[in-house]
Image: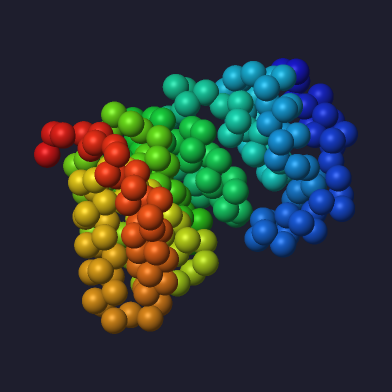
Length: 234
């Protein structure tokens, strides 16, 4: 399972060309894709196990599912800033971006600086990466202090005008995840959404209104009443 050619042949063997239409329907770039359901790619990843060297080789092939597999088998402990930069500049599909961020990038010491850096980028998927890192950190980095997320909120407010599909959805995702993290951040996320609405920018309104819809939902409010703030150092 460590041989690149063998793994590529395995990917091809589980491909379903007819599945490409469904992938395209969900906005996935299929220009260099086999047509493989994600659970089947994950199953192959489990058989391979963590393998940073193979992960890098798979990424270089440029095949969609090979890159997805690369995010599953990569070792975040061996991911450096250069790899984050290189892969981010290669992103051409939201699912690869999100998996790389969630499986690898957000677990590295560089996630915070890269979130700030990429959130200012012009390229659509590079900019998306910045906000996906914020969302993934809010959802999964339980020990990260509140100050980190307070620092992200002004960036979300500033960039909410960007109406490009894959950017605005990531900005909205980041705002919602930060707001759902704990009671303290919920209050600040609500204020950020209201600040966005106060911009009177129609392009930014969706980000705020959709976030407020979830953050003010009974489910979220009930959870915050029951759960204490995760980080008290402020």
